Image (tube, rainbow, N blue to C red; front, side, top):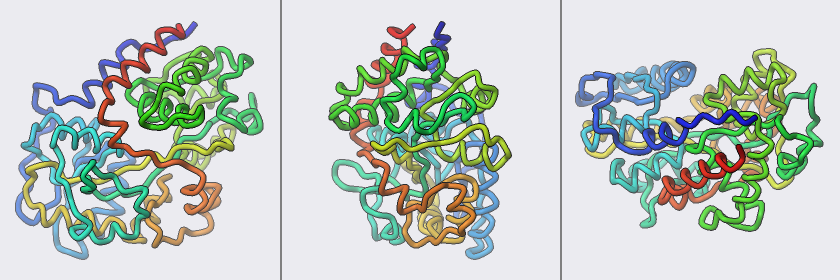
Length: 355
C-alpha cells in the first residue's frame, strides 16, 4: 500500500508562491553595512554562520546575521519585494522561479567577478543571460540504498528502480522536488530534456508503482533506509555522506552509468533589498577556497574550480569534484522553473495513479 501524503502538492505550492501573510520571523531591516542572510535552519545555518559569516565579518568588518527559516525562497516570495534579508540561499530552480516573478536582482559578472571560477554551465541565468546569484555548491542526485538489502550493481542503471522485484521497497519524494529533479532526470534518460519532460513520465510512473511511501522529510527517509524499511531511493549525495560519516555504514550511494543530476544552490539578492553593496561583497567572498572546503566537510561539493579538497574529503565524496561534475548533468533551471506548477501537478497525478 502506497502511503502518499496528499498535503505534498499544497505544501510545495506554498513554497513557490507568495503567501498573503507576512513571514512569521520578525527581523529588523538590514542596516547599511550589514548582511542579513536567509538560510535553512539547523546544520546549514550553523555552517553559514561559522564557516562563511564569521570569517567575512572578521575580514571586512561587515556584520552578518544568519536568519533560520523553513524555506528561504518562500520567505523571499512572501515579502513581495519588501525583503527582510539582503542575501538568501536557494536551490537553483527556486532562484529561477523567484526570477520569473521579478523577486530577485539580476546581476552581471562584473558585479560578482569571482563567478568566473565557476564553469558557465553552472551559472543560473534568465533568458536574457543575466545572473540570478552566485552558484555556491552542489550535491548530486544518485541512488541511495541499504547495503543489507541491495547492492550497487542492482542500480548500475537508473532503470533498476523500475524493476518489479523492488515493488513496495522504494521511496519517492514530494512533487515540489520530484518535478524539477527526478522527472527532469528521467526525461533525459529516456531521450527527452528539461524542456521535453514527457519521455520521463512512464519511467516516473514505474518507479512510483514500486514505492512504499512518499517521504515527507530527509530525516524520515534516512531513518527508514537505516532500519531497512526502504531499500532504495533517488536521494542526495550530501545526506548519505553525512550519514556514513556519523557511522551509519549500512546506507550507501551509487551513481548509475547514465549519470545523475547536479543539484546546485545559489545565493541571491532579493529584489529591493537594502545594502546591495554589502550583499554583493558577501556573494563574491563566498567562493573563497577556505570557505568552500568547510562546506565540503558538511557534504556540499564546490562548483568553483579554484578549490583543492583535502584527500579525506575526496574519500568521503567518493570522487573528485571534477569527476562528480563530469558525470552529472546540470540542466537549465530557468526552463524548469518557468512552468514548475504544471510540472508539480503532473508529478502529483503520477503519484495518484500509482496508488
